[in-house]
Image 1 (cartoon, rainbow, N blue to C red):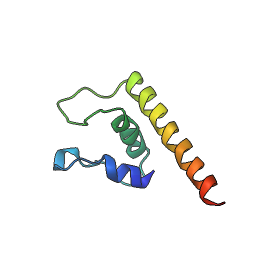
Image 2 (spheres, rainbow, N blue to C red):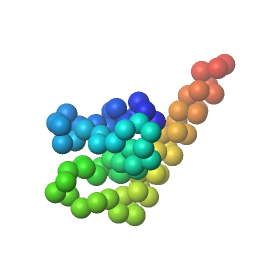
Image 3 (cartoon, rainbow, N blue to C red):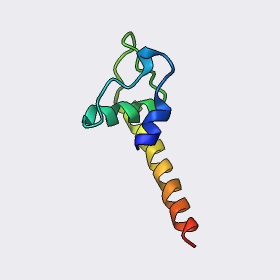
Length: 74
């Protein structure tokens, strides 16, 4: 998840991850970013639909990683 968070960060200071590594809000921020939420202060907070779609994308990423891990052991 940490590598995914690094990729989700934007290039500008406003799009950097605002939370420390031990904070649960950091992972909520990452799930919302997976669905395309930008994270600007002028934007609305992410809603249930954003989290749902982000969780589905995260689940797909995890399934792909587990498949890769299983296949690469052979």
